[in-house]
Amino acid sequence: MEDRPTGRTRPRFEVRARHTDSTVTVYQAYRPDIGRPAARDGRFPPSWRRERMTWIKPTFLWMMYRCGWGTKRDQETVLALEISREGFCWALRNACLSHHVPALHGDRADWQRRLREAPARVQWDPERDLHFNPLPYRSLQLGLGGEAVARYADEWIVGIEDVTPLAAEIRARVRAGELERAAAVLPDERPMPLGDEVLGHLRA
Image (cartoon, rainbow, N blue to C red; front, side, top):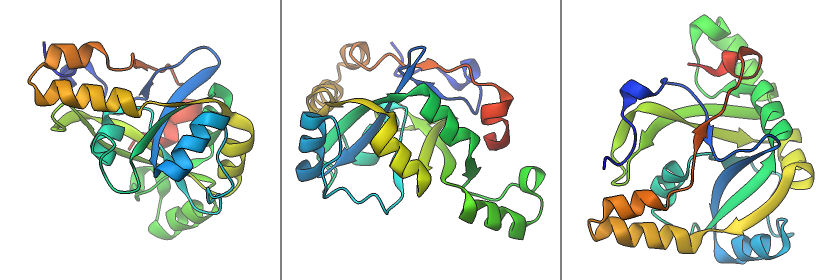
């Protein structure tokens, strides 16, 4: 079994996630003194700094690539956060791409102004396979700041789960060469049907 579908079967820019009609699951990784209370209480503890931009990732393997299966310093606790689909789409509608694309933004000064004013920003990075090799299609990273951070923490979160054990299990299977067994327990991520009014201004 291959690690992930090939780029020929995927649009270059699409959102893939665990999702329902009303929720989307995203991932973050924190040090244990933040991640564990968040999973226990279903909300971030007071030590979580909401004045900083926070990045959420809808694809599990990109989060694993970023946090090294939960082994990197200050990223030892991996969280799956179920948030409202309405909030997720609000963030996308109000986001700006983190890099300048003349066809979308016009001149650089106009893009820089939009980026400063936007409560969210988006970047597209190569998706990763189970060995963290880059794939020919992209994975969404969504940065939340200002109003978006407050909405995320106070309104959008439906539930928080500590998925650090799952990360460790999949990592062990990959290291043992058991790719089929590893792929079998990956979260079920499907493309999200998002119209141009949500995503059109973010397809780089």
